[in-house]
Amino acid sequence: MTIFIGADHRGFVFKGRIIAALKALGHEVVDVGTYELEPACDYPALSFEVGRSVAAHKNSRGILVCLTGIGHSIAANKVKGAYAALCYSKEAAELSRRHNNSNVLVLGSNFVSENTLMEIIRVWLETPFDGGRHLRRTRQIQDFEKKVFEGPSKTKGKK
Image (cartoon, rainbow, N blue to C red; front, side, top):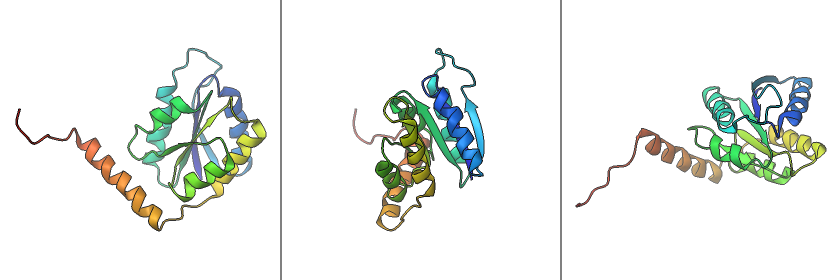
């Protein structure tokens, strides 16, 4: 599987370790940055790049790491076709796949140990989407995306 990965300066060290672990498992890893420990790194560009890449490459996934994961999660979810889940536990990672078909995993480096982080990634990568009633719900999200990304809705009514 191809995995696109990005991290700001607060996830930079973990990102290197994650890349090594993913490659050891046989995954193709595309590192979108940051490439050095640079505090001035702006995370939104990395989030958008991972989101766009995952949306454009069927059967790929993305991983983003920053201090809390919140900023990356907000930014990645602005990309049509990117379904980012901020997960601090294996259980949340599993459910994000089973119920929500997440394709981008977001991690907060300040809230999980390295061992837990690696377990979260393992569970997330190994867990399939359940489909069924969850498919109906994910399709509702996709339908809404289509409307939103076509442009703003035209309000009917009097001024």
